[in-house]
Image 1 (spheres, rainbow, N blue to C red):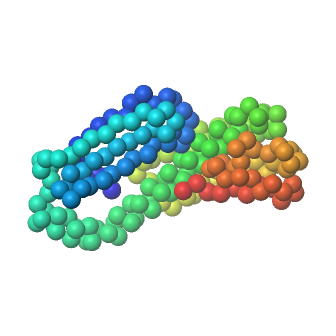
Image 2: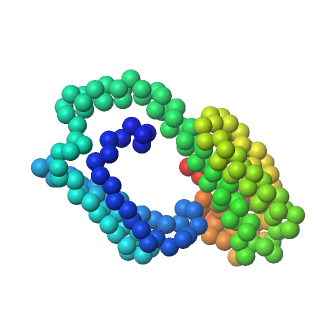
Image 3: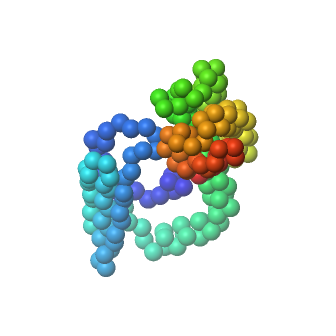
Length: 197
């Protein structure tokens, strides 16, 4: 986890225009040469803005003994780290799904394909889930998964009805299904809703 990292240096990539969650794409490149000099660069793919840092000094670097101790600790705490990783992945999946569904029903191209009451139901439920996630950052994996299943029970029938009501042809959801996956394209089959990792 990031809290266990050893800070060697930092820089900021500023001037990125506001965009919906998940839209900005930042490409980060790390390279280390034969002399142990670390170069890190970051580029915002939409604007081309970039920044970089070169770490040349030994300040903050670890000794061989410290590295060996950290490797041993990593092995010792591997199961805890995997548990934490799974917990965070479930949290991120729930949060992404909620934001994606909320964004879908608020999209102008969808407003005429879904009733106001259904749109409000999904939007309110997504807001409720997002608030719950914000207040429960340390919840367990199964709690996040349970919340996602609850949200899917609300959203899936409405999204399926909306998709089937659009004829399945040229209509459908803008940009495909939530999470960036394309829709199924078939009329009566309904949408293929993928979980976001």
